[in-house]
Image 1 (tube, one colour):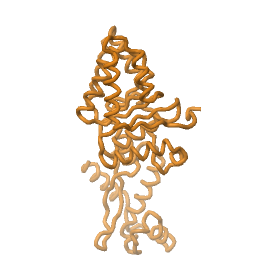
Image 2 (spheres, helix red, strand yellow; image 1 turned 180 degrees about the vertical axis):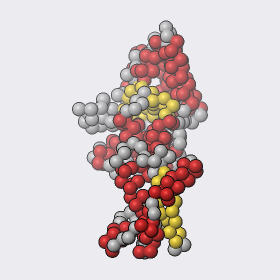
Image 3 (tube, one colour; image 1 turned 90 degrees about the horizontal axis):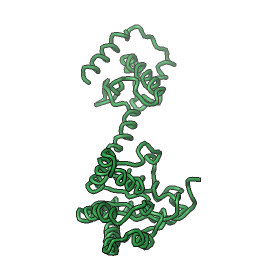
Image 4 (cartoon, one colour; image 1 turned 60 degrees about the horizontal axis):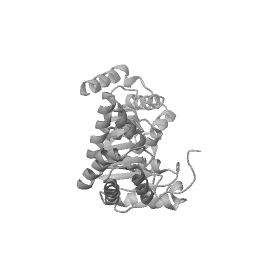
Length: 311
């Protein structure tokens, strides 16, 4: 990095002869009152002394703005001026655009598994003040509950339920995004029907078996887990006992944040489990799963109402 910066400085210094510039009052005022430099309160003498750098700074700024996803300089640094103890100094600063791009994407690395990878859901932003939240009491309740848990570092999840398309997944993504970006927590975002299907395919396919085991292990160990569309999976007591209950038991024991999305209330989900589980101890499995969910969300069950956002 230092070698590249020194090289750029030599190019700048060798490319311009400061003494060849003769500036009229209009040109001096252009730099003195330019929005980029006005905070420096430059004198006429300082403008003459640093004219090479002033021109280079504006050139880099304008050219870099034309590039959407990259900096004009390969090392993502820009020439700039600053005032310190009354004097003007030349220095290099990180490209603000690239900082935003890199910071925007950095948190994605914390999604150890994400069914919705590369989805627009990464743009999910939810606050109690946003219009969508303010006009929907159920969403406002969920947002406030999340913010309180988030602010207090509570290891407590939320169970969101409601009709299709009302925004449960969208809200959960906003929640996990906040944990990843601001708390540096690892995330697993699991779509339950896909998870069950991968486990089934794994009986005959080693790649699916490996993927299913990976999701299983990550879901037990990650800081924040979202089980999306709980109840939409077609599963039996074997899956619920060996996978779901196992995951929930570990997360209860380790007090890890778990968020559930479902079309079913917790009572409806329990009834669904009872119908699907056929073994002799199926009722015990169902009771344990429901009890673990209640523990993980501290009885925070919120029905999300509203219109279908997908249409």
